[in-house]
Image (cartoon, rainbow, N blue to C red; front, top):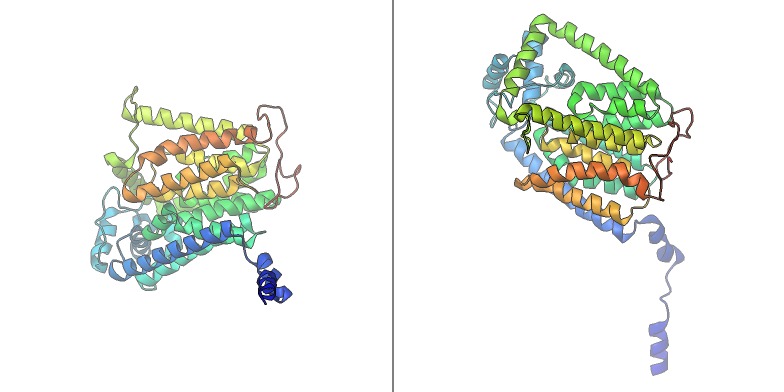
Length: 417
């Protein structure tokens, strides 16, 4: 009897083959499934908090000022879309709860394209517009992550949910900022360029430049250095056409108002960063220091010009490192740079880089910003040297740029170099 019990206990349960083998093929491994579940819960929490904020204080965000600029243009003409007095008048007449007064750091400073996009939504109620705008941004970053991780459903799910769960994206959604849409256009530009559609790549990059030029200012040079010169030329053409349209819509009055508003905003001491060292005075030292970071980033792009994917990641981090005006939601670019830099399995140094970046990017949520300011230049150096660390490659070796005519269209999971 005892022998029979032991034999039954040791015997493998008789389960159908589909039950025994199916889940291992359909479900992701635990090292991916656990972060997905954690990120999903974090996203649900942020979504619940976002809905609560919109229901109680719908105007307590930056989307409100974009909306006011669109309303001002539709009411008095586009030359008045930057006029602070018009924006303040509209704010008072709408009476949105929690809406801040128009001030140097709370007025419309973006190119007209952003207000034109939102003008399409203005016939609808403001809260509904905010939900639609948020949905557009979330859908855009979802598509962008699919372009990078499309071959692996579990990797795409992890990248999409974890990106939304991190503070930069959560803060961008909370403030109604267009960062998710902006970097989705950057990813789409990379995707098109890698597949030989340089015309569309340049146009998409031009659209991104017309939303927030300061967040993508180095990226046209990245495409040019990596051999995608047609993309850079189409970017130049697209932005040239956009600038002409903006000038025609604003007229001399609107252009003058825009320049005055930019000077008004820059007069606020907190508008620009404060350098740690000021050998040439605060403003000159800041410009010199940030120019040095931009030059280092472009040198790093040249050293890694064989891989547009890595070079673009360096360009994004270099743009943020060299920026003189930056907000916490702009760090969404760091998330996208990690997407592009990590291709395939991660090494220990990759894990340390991403782990320290996640912690540094989350700390601003509780008011600690020193960590991310230190991590940014270190991350730039890491990305530049990462190619040399992998396989003993020497980035100083002579090699021709690999443009679209000399490469096979890149697909996620395959190495470009």
